[in-house]
Length: 264
Image 1: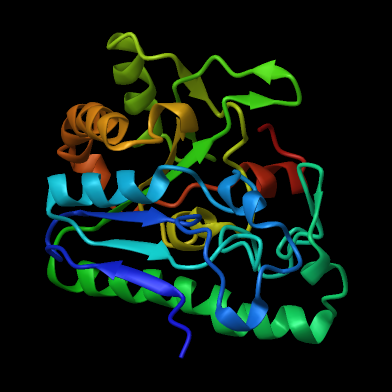
Image 2: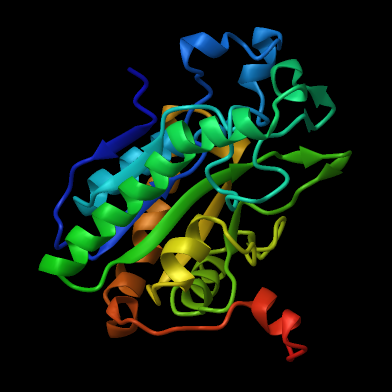
């Protein structure tokens, strides 16, 4: 039986849940390699390199629970909304995915039911359990990004992605920059993605949340994971100790404000 979710146990009173949406480059056996050369599964198109190891390391530092995916984003992307056209990618950074090219609505629904929904359900259940017996939990999602994209060498070491809730993002950006870390504010990606994991579990529930991206070349091995795990612990501890990190407060997403014609 396919088990699409890895759950790391931790204290339900830790006050923080760590997530890793793109933890693995694996596939269920029945999907083979989706018609791809195996070398493609070592690229960022298949998973966030180093993110799983970093998630496990930082969860251990905080004795906190974590939820990670077990299968590649090439099968289905857990960080996309249920109706997002990029939920099952047919082309990713120049690579055609033959096993996805003919995926019809029924096939996408099957993947959504078997691999996408269980991850969302596991996150929801863990947050419910934490909310029931401890402080309001903050959510920290860990990702990684490629050093070079379409010929552009990305200068950031860490990127903080967020939508409208500044409670974790703003102090993390300030504290990382104070340490001399090249930190992107919604770079190289924008954190306002309606339907993504943090929109569903953070924005909609009013829980403090943030997405942290590390540049892949910095966490590709144990030494880098250890170093950056320490850096993140240093900046996260005071932020997570603040009262605002454990309160329910609803912020209107930038996407919703744009739809309403309001100022972003």
